[in-house]
Image (cartoon, rainbow, N blue to C red; front, side, top):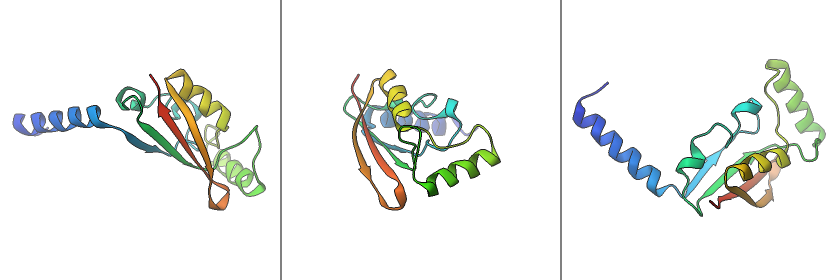
Length: 121
């Protein structure tokens, strides 16, 4: 567990981190739906107002994607039925419920998206 001074040092670092988080990255679009960021993540509590959350990876858009991403989605679901690509609108809705608004979507190579969210409340 560590010495009391080491625990205090970790607590100070953790506290300082919480107060200063202005940018975080997350790759939740393939994780189980119930664990997707920011649904169960502690991030919404720690991200300061105006702070950015950037996600990167393949998403479904309006329930569909390019064939290679649909193949990837199917391969994830074969491994674990709870896994799979998340629909961008669903992720955006969950984020908004937690005071995090989608600001920008950037199309990246290999049919991935970088999605920028900002904490608004």
